Amino acid sequence: MLAKEQRISKGLRRWRGISTTTSLFSLRSSANDLSRSRFAFVVSKRVERRATVRNRVKRQMSACIEDLLKSVRPGFDVIFYVKKEVVSHSQQSICESIKDALQKQKILI
Image 1: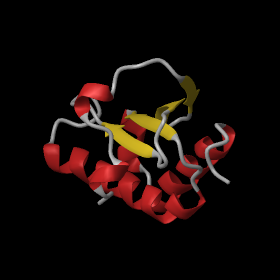
Image 2 (image 1 turned 60 degrees about the vertical axis):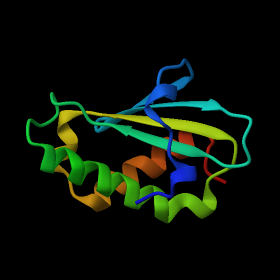
Image 3 (image 1 turned 135 degrees about the vertical axis):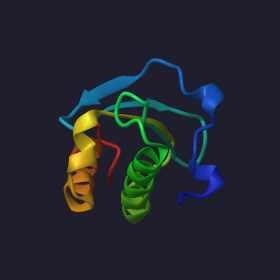
Image 4 (image 1 turned 180 degrees about the vertical axis):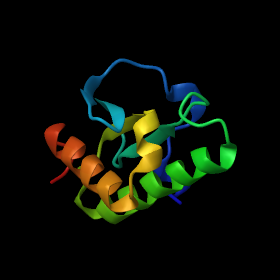
């Protein structure tokens, strides 16, 4: 699980920023005035009705971000809006998709 300083609270999740779309999720990022980057994962009930599956998806994506955290540039807020297709993919393919999207947004070093 990401540390509390690395997470975006629910009240700050609505804003405009640069967006990127993949087959598994949509990603929005914007600059913040902090010395660290923060992340949020939005998995709606449209993705999966069962909360256990939605929470598993969040944990998988959070684990991928934790692995990439050393190479993430500071000063960004990033929100992942998850799509239905993510449920049927492995964690490795999810991580590769996250890495590609972050590189496209120039968030990774």
